[in-house]
Image (cartoon, rainbow, N blue to C red; front, top):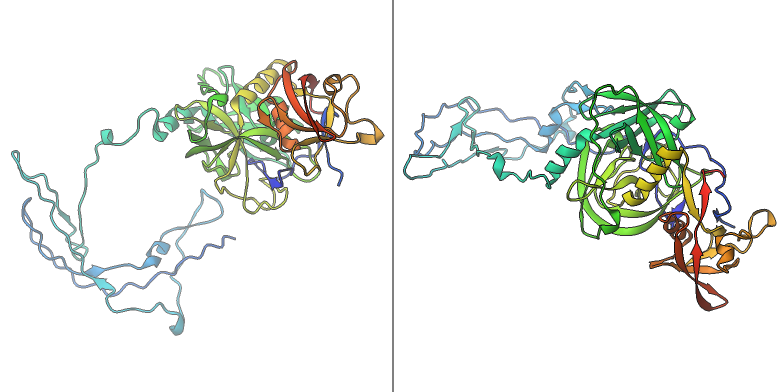
Length: 481
């Protein structure tokens, strides 16, 4: 997978294998590089002999309870006596027989394992009588509990709370599965319009684009087959359409304004991490305009984004799901994470899946919305270009136009946007409009936030001199043209 500023960003879909290379992107912005679960479980602690139960006297609402009879207190291993789970997140295995220990390995029984449990009655006075409540189980050795009433109105479940946002959004989020091919997997998506279009990541449906079967499952368990409408490898955005939905009413998620997001804004992520549908996590926007280059593995073409960064937990299977703001509006498409074990370019779904460390990346919805609308209209992506080759091996500050193009040609397309603006091979671009350009991925991701025909101000360095020029962005259709 490609790296961004020496960091790797694996795509967060949960496919079982990498996507085949689509061929090199065109020369316009062509990257050119010259150079067992290990959790320890505590064994169950053998319980001490229980004392004979002593039934307590029946108390009144305002009386103090009698001294409770001592009862056994379990150690840390008590929880291990419950059901244990297999690798299948939905399968429950029978509880294994207790482990027998050699004499030297038995947990030590320290004096005082049997502890006295004390409790006081909750007492309240006033007109209308006592409201205290005392409950004692007369059959469990005197254990006492106090129950507190919960008023639902006291819980923060307003429409703008995480619970309120999740309740409204979950019915419009789907789990996408591809089957019938070698590279099948699981990802997420959400309803884009009432015509049945679902927006997701390209890497989620890449195998289906080659002929695999797609299904979309809603939070209520209803399923529908789906077909690929269009996909954009460079943007990592795809659109699928549900088939035979009949009279089902689809509710699109409202789209927000990703340009208006600021660092510190709350976020909610929804998806199917590790195949667990309907999972909701929350966090904040921790950074904006984060340059991210991700790919399906060595040899495959990269996707570039100027991403929203969030600390909401995102894991394999979250790919394509919505990143929502504090009002429940979509501000991004969850696409990639930085994982602690992704030292190379290992995609999710590969042999070594990583998990969230609080660094998740989402494609801004303003960009994704335009890409999706283009895919629905034409079936193919359209990219803004400058007509030059970027040197991805450059280690200085900025993005360098490659000194040489492929096969001995020029790295600046004759008559292209960069050429018309006076840019030359070897120039180092340091700024595009107000965005500081510190690397090749930053430049490409920033260009792709614009549309063909947009004019941008480019600041560059040549022979130690800083200059500025205006570039009118050109157009490239498709991923392989």
